Length: 124
Image: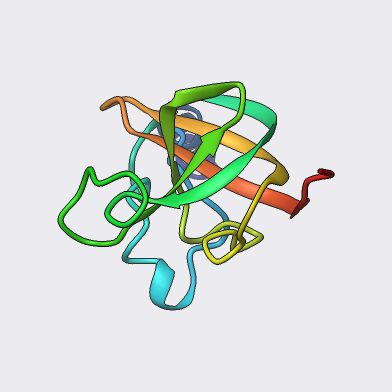
């Protein structure tokens, strides 16, 4: 009986003491190994609603040697938001202005990832 109680206490402590890891959704398929936030400790999560557009780091912004899509918000055109490949909605092929909602997740190493929950073409 004492051993069972001790095991329960140890397991409960382990659950409480375990850091929160980024899940960026339910990591599945090809995206699971590609998500830069996988297995990182999330130190901050912020709900966001933004309007902006998806741009290519190579073709549109000329800041990379190969194609890589990022989200640029209308309210802050200096910040380039990395898009979680395991978002609920794939916005990487959407063109023009879009409105989205989701979460910004910041890891302990400074990595910030935009997890998109919903998106639609923004009103012109």
